[in-house]
Length: 244
Image 1 (cartoon, rainbow, N blue to C red):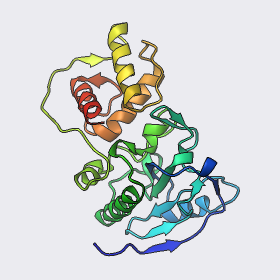
Image 2: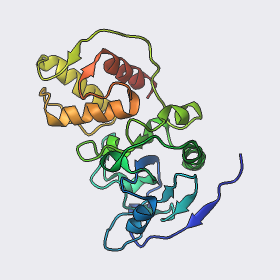
Image 3: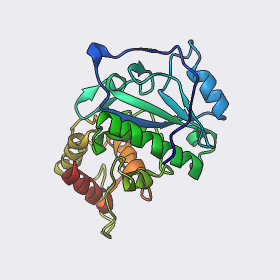
Image 4: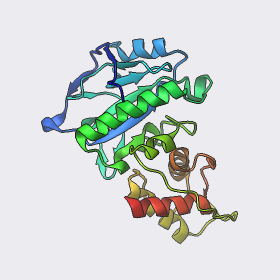
């Protein structure tokens, strides 16, 4: 594989990682703005107070905005696997796409190939475990939808970046929802929390649980994004827990 060509456009929006913290997590985003140029300008704007380590444009060009040793401000209020403040210990990649607000669309092959190569290098450099390659919506599910259900997580997993759960053909229309028993809801919430999500175990299938299930589906069950935990969603969650 050819060496990545990376252009620098350094952002002022960064600071030091706490206590020399070494990255052990990769977070993928979409830019969610009308154009890639607009997104890059915002990430470089000192007033915006946001940034990422890298931006991958639709044609596959890669721009580095914060060096990996520093903390970029990409995840905001966030949580994964019992830890808050994901920026402290993660690398953030912004992927140019208008997002759900501006005309969400599939990610071009050239862009995905660049994301894959960049992600593979980062994962190898820091020995990032496969269950710590996540989307922004995974670590901030009450606020964020990105990179969303059109992002090709399967392609990354097939090439050693992150992981997915296979489809095993479970059917049925049984859902865990607000009409389910407290025990069923608690079991679902406990499993999502065990997997890594910052979900409270309450026994109530309220807005927080709907948002968390939706985020899980956007990453791991992209054909079934509903916010309701059906049989296939639960199967995938169980399989992923076994692989974690």
